[in-house]
Image (cartoon, rainbow, N blue to C red; front, side):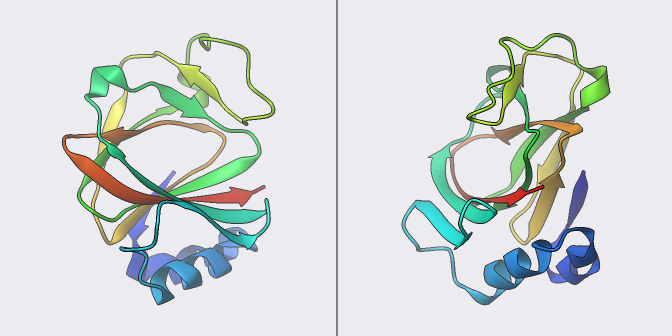
Length: 148
């Protein structure tokens, strides 16, 4: 898991060959007003989901994990809390891993809660179970999907 300011994203671009393209796009475009939906940068290898949704109470949000993608969460409207727990510390998933959707959900407790502010990003890897969208009010955010 990485939590950093967007202005420091060049430090992390060497971690994956698609990170540079993702961060350059995010920092060079005004994404505050684009319609919610998918922005394709490189087909299924690299894309951005622009989301507008209500934030949830911590007890209402479940941890999710992915195997094929790294997620980069970028809140735009307000601070969002993202729950985190290492994959090795999780109990049993609620259902078998959904290969087509690339996710499994977990209802674990004892989760670390991390605030992520506009101007920051949180990158989560397959070992990072995460529960995004925790808070109050309406959120507009980017979720960059980077194929491993």
